[in-house]
Amino acid sequence: MTAVSFPILRLPESALQESLKLMSIRDRLSVSVLSKKAKRLFTVVNKNPITAVVSMTSTSFCFNSRPFQHFQFVLNSDKSNVEIRKYSRNGYKWTYLNVPGFAEKQWFKHITDVFFRNQCTILIIENSPGRSIEEICECTKKLKIVELRVDHSKIQNYQVLELLPSLKKLKVRSLEGPNPKSILTQSLESIDINSLNVTLDDLLALNHTDFTLHTQSCSDSDMNLFLKHWIKGSHSNLKSLAIYIFKYIFKYCKTFEIGV
Image (tube, rainbow, N blue to C red; front, side, top):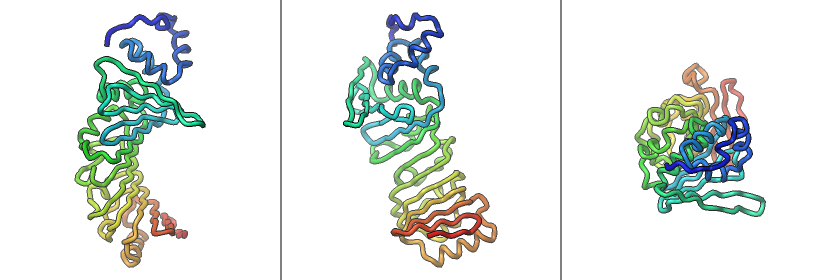
């Protein structure tokens, strides 16, 4: 990255920090690509804890977060620029930022470094058949991913905690075949599964604090047998179990109160 003269960067430190904080998110990104010093300054300005949300498809990434709720950064694999969207009640306006030598991978790294490095992140992966889980984890390794929302096919054969050591919550969609034990036995705070095929063995494999199940196939006899095991002291980690069946919601907790 070639150094570029920019007058604001010559301000005294205290005045510089205050000036940088007053900049919009769009302007912060625009200035941060001017030089290594500018990038470093904005990394310091943006160090306050936030929760970031990164949505990923086979062709794009989208960054947003609560402090920047009116802005999104959108990267497309077939374009070399970043789209910066500013939302309002009437929709959104967009601008594009282009830097020579920057493509999707470089933009992802730069935005992560400046705004989201080591911040708690929710990663949403959908419609991404062209990206392997290893590629995704390599790309997002500087993010502290605490929640993963993903299709079953992406993680069916993986120990997700080995790939994402900060993970606490897992939401898995579209489970059509057998439920892989690699998902059910993860030691997480919570797991939410939408599955069409749940067995007693699946329930007995649970190793979470909170478990949410969307299903139409778990039999009453299997559920009753599991609850008897749980009442007798099995699954000591499990504190709450919620089951969504058609329009009903059954919620069980360790005090054994049952609500419909």
